[in-house]
Image 1 (cartoon, one colour):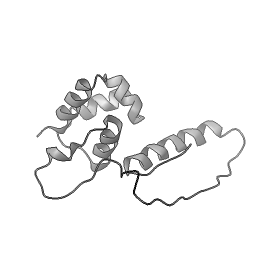
Image 2 (cartoon, helix red, strand yellow; image 1 turned 120 degrees about the horizontal axis):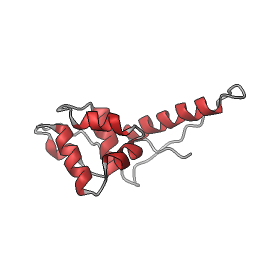
Image 3 (tube, one colour; image 1 turned 180 degrees about the vertical axis):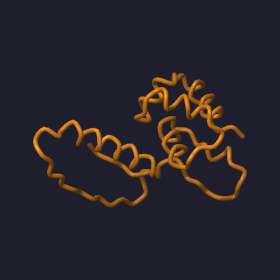
Image 4 (cartoon, helix red, strand yellow; image 1 turned 60 degrees about the vertical axis):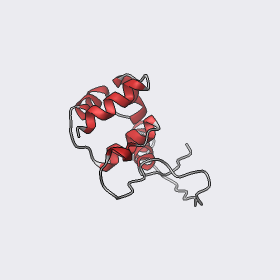
Length: 115
């Protein structure tokens, strides 16, 4: 099984170009095109693309293990965690960049993030 080819086919079937999917994943197109060439993907990348494409890639695995790459249902009990970040004036761009990456990671592991 070549996972990159599977994802590429699903994305194109959904009408998403590499550029559009890369935008949804928060990466640049070159990174996504490199992922398309990889046979094996990390679970984090699989979960991120599952969420971005709203597609359950679990069916491509021949094991009895439940991966659960798609987000939990609306009925799943949730808790909230709020943080306050202090930063030096002038570092807004760096903070926003860091937060964007944290949001992507949070979504990849199934967390809900409100901006």
